[in-house]
Image (tube, rainbow, N blue to C red):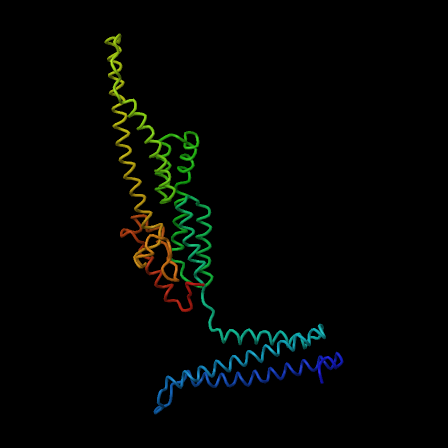
Length: 349
């Protein structure tokens, strides 16, 4: 008989019986899979040649049995769904469908193996937190650092330098809050002031916001350079006039000496500012870019990743000598080793 030639009651019982038959076949395949898994996991008896090949064959047969079990369970699930469609309020059919769906999920998990622990999003949030911090976006940086710590703790992984970065960001933000506010207010009132721009650059550097500090130093250098050009233009001695008196000549001489002193002072300030800017750029190459040591020569300096595994930027504490005398946080390498040693960790998911 075909299902469409039966009455509703007969169709319902037909789907139930068919589903039970598939479940019975699934239990048979499950027993076979358990048998072969026991053979593959137990040590081979003495005298057996090529024990590794025997165990590998048993593993393959166990996997095939698990796949057939999953197919039978999926067929049973389809039959139970058809039965529930005919009698939506039947409690026994609904319970059987729920139980069969759970069995399908369990069988699929047994075939797929353990679920890997995804770390790619955590790495992205960790690096993004440091990049936001370098750009002076403190609120975004703290939010991303908290998300990175939360993602690690949800999977039972050590937070390590992710927590160090979060703690350091909060401490620096609280310590420099009033100073940063005063500097920004002065800079807003006097945007072309060398002193205000240099004070803002120093504040950013004290917080190790390297990209923002570099931008402030460049701005300060541009303003100071324009002042130096103006002082150089005034430095040229005036041509003595025919009807200029002694007093006027003395005033012109004093003005010329003052312009010379101002130009020399600006030139010294430009030299010191260039040294500061060079130092900030060296720190940025160390802490704001991915390491180039392990890359191929053709990929160095391109910003393209060499390999599938992403690189973690150095911890924020590495930028402070009191926390990292060697230039790298002493816990950074240990933290990476602990993450690599955790089973199931996948850096590409």
